[in-house]
Amino acid sequence: MDRHRLLSATFLSLLALCFISETEPASFKMVNKCRRTVWPGLLSGANSPPLPTTGFELKSGKSRTITIPKSWSGRIWARTLCTHHQNQTFSCVTGDCGSQKLECAGGGAAPPATLAEFTLNGAGGLDFYDVSLVDGYNLPMLVVPKGGRGGGCGATGCLVDLNGACPAELKVAREGRGGSVACKSACEAFGDPRYCCSEAYATPDTCFPSVYSLFFKHVCPRAYSYAYDDKTSTYTCGSADYVIIFCPAPYTR
View (cartoon, one colour):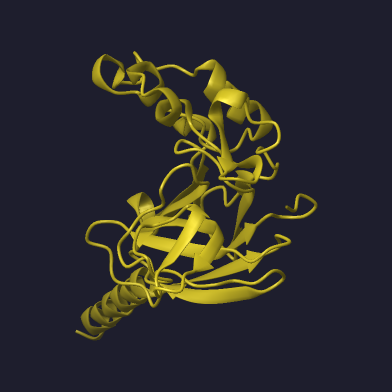
């Protein structure tokens, strides 16, 4: 009887530990190392719990830490060249989420934008994360897991400022000021199903890297460059906190 009680107590303790582990929130520290202010945006996936914020201002050299529910999935990006207008609306030249407010409130990043994508506490209890250039690029970004257990827990991102080197047909210039502020994906620039991995090219067996996605991949080998770039671009870590750095040193803009 005592042995039965001991086993029951052990089982309940393990169950409680598992429950705590699965529900313990993660810490996301966002750091702005750009020379200018950026405005991070956050978008939750379907059925993900709400976040304490969906968008805010982050001045150069500053950081902000947000508590993220452990079962959360979604994406984070930086909006740039944003303006509070006299009619009380808000807009950004790159990464705008269409809410016309500081908070994105369920709006995603208008491409092109560099995206950090997360699925926390996924298969095997691991977090899955990547930095994606599939929707284009607007600034360098680095994701660094801290204190994780299990999985590779590798840092990933795109450390290089691609705007100057962006192919001419993909460049996005700021209206009236010239110079490239973002770099489109080939899918957005041309709408060709071969570049979008759509229609007859909607499987890994029919959609392959293009000269444009290879440009992104060569400069940023850890980042997603096209829709089926999983093998070299998806990272895993268990029970980690994350640091997300915009314009990581020495690449600033």
